[in-house]
Amino acid sequence: MRRSDAAGFVSFVGAGPGDPELITLKGLRRLREADVVVHDRLIPVELLSDVRADADVIDVGKAAGRHGVAQDDINRLIVERARARGRLVRLKGGDPGLFGRLDEEIGAVQAAGLPFEIVPGVTAATAAAAVAGCSLTARGRASLVVLATGTDHTADETAGLDWDLLARIEGTLVFYMAARRLPSITTLLADLGRDPGEPALVVEAAGRRDARIVSGELGTIAEAARRAGIEPPAIFITGPTAGLARVSLARLLEAGAYA
Amino acid sequence: MRRSDAAGFVSFVGAGPGDPELITLKGLRRLREADVVVHDRLIPVELLSDVRADADVIDVGKAAGRHGVAQDDINRLIVERARARGRLVRLKGGDPGLFGRLDEEIGAVQAAGLPFEIVPGVTAATAAAAVAGCSLTARGRASLVVLATGTDHTADETAGLDWDLLARIEGTLVFYMAARRLPSITTLLADLGRDPGEPALVVEAAGRRDARIVSGELGTIAEAARRAGIEPPAIFITGPTAGLARVSLARLLEAGAYA
Image (cartoon, rainbow over all chains, first blue to last red; front, top):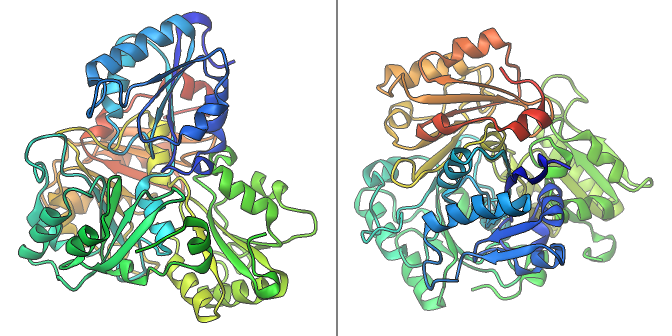
């Protein structure tokens, strides 16, 4: 028993990128122990079959339409349900600390005086590289990886990032939630001086059995992804190691069709 | 059975950051199925008890002293042993695609005509943030994370990175294998204009039960880490969300002493 009786204890758990086998042993254990599970839309639904029959399962990803439950309401829900029932697992897709609004939820939990922990998970960036059969780094050519998202759910899809600087970074750039923004991301980077011939990859549903990959070059991949009908969730990778990607026989057999 | 009989099949598996419970279910399954396991030094030794009794276990991390077996020899070993025995697991600390020389080993496996797969893992960056109780991103303040290493095993410990550009990045910087290089990393960043008052963290042995954390500011944390006797492996995090780090009661009970 890890909670202080009825006081409530919150575990922020990374569910991994979509394959139910890509959760950690610790994450799965927390899920099995949980009295309450509050989960996002992009988690492997198969994991919910491991939750105790008497536990509450609350989906905050699709209850209120496209953007789900408002963040303030999620924060309140976490605190209330943890106090009421005890061990609460907040299950997030990928890793909780990357683009998951974890800071806001921790703030609410701490303000309520509840103890918490974070159980890290496999993030979509490394899962996307894995399914494509490539590394994100390479000695002497890519000793730096940038993980980015430009949306922040604002109207301007390129807000919040220094694109001039991103264009100049020598290494690998990875953009989360990139499916809809591929034309603007790739155009900005190339217009600001990044080599349009740089190897690039788009991976749809990395970590799921129906993952699809489009490989090409920075300057033309947005159009290739459009033609292939790439849908969210998708990861965009551009940089020298993206050219090393080769879908191995094993992945092809396991993951199904590739573009 | 996933291999094509005796032809050999290589699974590059991420062991996670040190806690044996932070491997994925899939990674553990591959380890249990393996005919041969070739592993690095920084993997949780507890995992090796899950390997079959008749499997070969080869440690390439410490056989030849400080830098271990030469990369060319590891590449050759992987190909030879996979061909000889069948299912080979190449077990790497953290995630295989981040700072793990995965591209070089894949190159050797592909040149030999062997099929392979990559099973991603929890990387030390997210594990370090998790143990410190903080996020690596925050809406509006950190929509970008840089994962970096400057060593590349060259004599010049700051080689290969554009420090001027790193100093100007608005977001979170994470440096792997940073224990010995903290004075040079922090001095370079501050000298090139990064705010010396920015929140910063050093996490030793992230993901292990004996993890230790030093929190402070960019300008002074190297000295604080030196006084605390921080040893490799250590992750260095600097950026706005590092200031949100609060070691929760749960982590304190589980992980032991913190500086």
